[in-house]
Length: 195
Image (cartoon, rainbow, N blue to C red; front, side, top):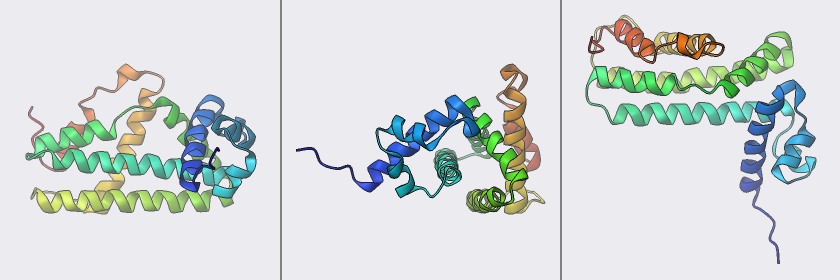
C-alpha cells in the first residue's frame, strides 16, 4: 500500500521543483502548474503549502539565505585567524550561482514595481540582514579588530558587495577575481589578508 508523503516532504519536493522550474523558465514564465507537475503533485499541493507563487519564491529565498548563513558560520568556526576567516567568508559569500542570481534579480525587479510583492520582499531582506548581522556581531566579538563598523553597517556593505560582484560576474565570470571580497573585507576590518 502506498503511503501519502508527509507535509514536510511535500513542501521540500515543491521547493526543489520550484527552484528548477523557476531557473529554467524565469519567475514570470513559470507557473504553479509546472511546479506541481515537476514535483509530482497537483497544484493543490503547491497551494496547501504556499499561498502564492510569490510566497513560493520567498520560501526559496529563505532557504538560500539559511544555507549561506549556516555555511558562513561553519567557515568562521573552522578558522582561528582573521585572514583565514575573511578568506572563508569571502569564499562562501561569493559562491556563484548564475541561475539563482538571475531569478533573484527578476523578483527584485518585480518587488520594486509591485507594492504587494515589495512588502513581503522587504520583510525577507530585513530578516536576511538581521540574521547576517548576528553572525557578523559574533565574529566581531570573537575577533577584536580595529574597525569603525557596527554589525548592521558591515552587514549592509557585505550584502551589497556580494550582490554587486555577482552581477558583474554574470555576463563575464572572469571579471571578478576570487580574492576581491576577502581583500575588501580585510581593508574594512583593518585586517591583513596575507598580502
